[in-house]
Image (cartoon, rainbow over all chains, first blue to last red; front, side, top):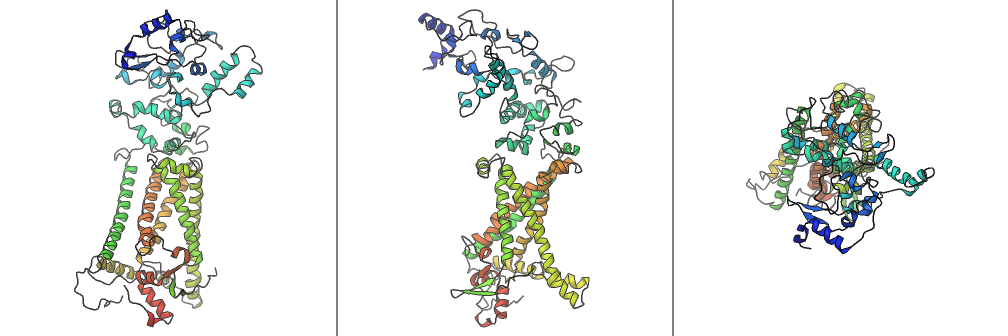
Length: 356
Length: 265
């Protein structure tokens, strides 16, 4: 398929498909028959910025996702008719038509967004003024995407999805409709790890690992220093037990979106709160309060971390000194074997004169 | 502790072999090298986590949930051996040197000190001259190789390396392992220092063993691919002449074989 095909306007394609009268299997929530077109794998185009955009919706995956009970138009509220104009980006704080069961109100991700706004990652400062370098403060979709958009290979070989046996327990009482199934998904998807911890480190490193970003905000290279800890090394080799960024930077009892600056007195990384943070129930529960004195984000900077700097210098010289001395000996010894008959002294016929 | 008697010279197939290490000493060495190899294989993948070999190696050692357990077990055994060995030589020194002095009524601090300094493992003046002789020989200022005693200065260095390395590495590893308990009285920053001590000293130890110690006992042209004294406890006559000529002459003379002493080569 040539690139020119993708450049064809989506509207034209839609019209053509409609004319052909192809009717897809229609989703119950798909009021506007969106899947009629979006079920086709090739549905894509190159946008004004030259970026390749894929508009394909894999229905099988979508049905397993957290948004299955929401109508397409609940999020894509600017689409009122088919064929539609290029759609706006989805705003996660929009109220959808799903009634949230505990409060009988329309559901929205707004509480999460409010929490984020209060956190160190919020776009406004305490006085409500926009912070400098607005583009560096993340919105919802800088860290999350609809699972739908993850590569298909992500699902291969993983035992993810709905546990039939788990669901059966819900269905013992909740027999009507798909209530049990959708709430099972609702609850368990929040209990599971949303991401692999390595992926979380990667997400934070998107900004915090960027040298220019660090300079703009006068921050240390916390990603590199974290990667020197056992915490990261164990994660890297597949452990699920050691902490990623969010485990230590969120105060007990708060959601992960409420990461505060260490200067804030309520922050998990504030000096006076670190003992509590390290000693949460799943981590260093029995540790002494002094564990908090352990420096996690260490660099070998002479002024900031003199102890580490001078220890490194000492061990580097010790290692180099010992090894260079002995490797030189080995080299000379091999040389002596290779050229055994050369000598600086005239042969006297008695090489065994000294007797120590 | 009753020591088995070993013949100073043992003949096999018309060749002479010279006694070096008792079974008890060889077994201690087996414990040292098995634990050190285990510690290296389970430890270095973490130090060099970003290298391509790190993940396959740690998976080979049982993965991230098993390898640290092996590391702790091997470390505990090695620390235990260190303590055992220290008690072992103090006991030997006491029964073989101090008690005879006591029986003879010569037990003074000076005499005990002198006996201690005369122990074959203690560095002495001869080691210093041997070192000079060795450099003169290696730099072609003489054609006479150094004539080492029962223990050469290199072997003494090999012996004292763990005596520095284990006290630096072992307790550091132990405290990092039991960090939750130790931080009730140790400040957290001590862990930072111990972490550097543990991994950097480990690197020095591993590099020294791999390049220097193994060159001396396995890679050197006349030993390659494997020196066997760590298994048999006996060294061949050729190796004895090459590495311990002074001791060779002494033992041959003691055994009444002075006429058969071969020249140094």
